[in-house]
Length: 157
Image 1: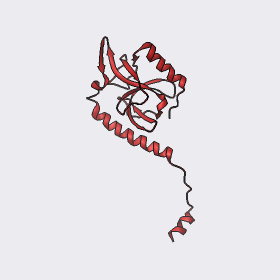
Image 2: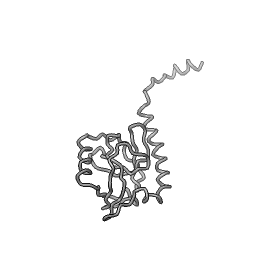
Image 3: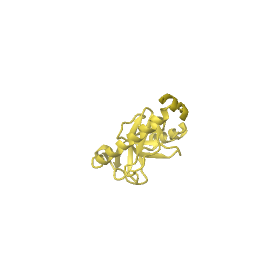
Image 4: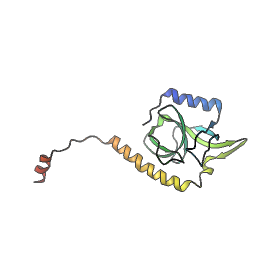
């Protein structure tokens, strides 16, 4: 699970406030976002499943991926062009929600660009929910003492 220093998160927040849109690099969010796309970000620490979010990972890198599930303050994300889920992140890692792709003077809503990929996203989201729920259960499970083989035989007779 990603643990982020407040300083790393503050650095990204300050960049958003000072510099405006974030420039995307990499192919993990294709076909929704491409290298060089600029996105407007709304600072929002409580995104909804399906939102494209900006967060800081455990290595203090800024990441733009889709939120596929959350359990309490634990979030599961996935790039639109990825099969493997990101490591779990905590709410403190989240910087905001991507609102629009900025092209010149035009802003295109991110939700409008994702309509074609929605079926595959729903499938991935379901897998994310199952995976995340399993991890969440494992973290909450308290260890129990296991019975020895002789104790099991005694109970059975």
